[in-house]
Length: 294
Image (tube, rainbow, N blue to C red; front, side, top):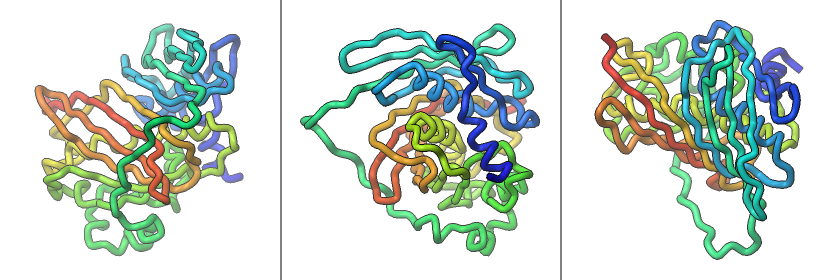
């Protein structure tokens, strides 16, 4: 297994310290602060480790303080409810004795023959095979991308990007170079770079990790700006994810993102995540503070 694959698994595997207490580490101490998706993904896994025979169907979390990537993160899980069909867990991520992220996760035993069963269709976009780095690099806009973004999309540089345990294939790249998208919709394919075990908790945690990636681009794309625009200061406030149907996070998934609203210094974004066959597997929503940098 390559170092890249080992790092991909390490970010998802938590060390048990006692009853309902786990420890996680940051993958790249040079990434400041701790990537929000890491807190979300590790919180999902911590909650899953305390529930048997039920699958997580949602997590709602709030970012409290920036995380320190040089310090391990403690995840304290509290059993809020264990009913006949649903279980609920409260997860608190702690550093230096203080909470930095707080979330509530809900689990469901599942129902037989549900009276309602529907989903929105997947957007019509090119498949990931048409969006390889070799083909992407031939686009005229690619050379204009900031170096950091080019390296995000290039799987040939895993050692230089230990903070990126997922492979990304963007459908659009114009918003990274200031091209305005009136509708603000952004799409990209992603999958975990390493082959994951069959344990569902790893796949839930990996998708949760990726669900925070680039989600605010859907808001800034409406204005022809990117998250690297030094004129703005984005800070994620909260994050919610719902798991609808089974999936594997080490297979290609499409993340379709949009931003329906921005007002009073806050922007709201949401996304749908599909399998290649069009199955809707998860929904995501996020709100962030979006201010002009002084």
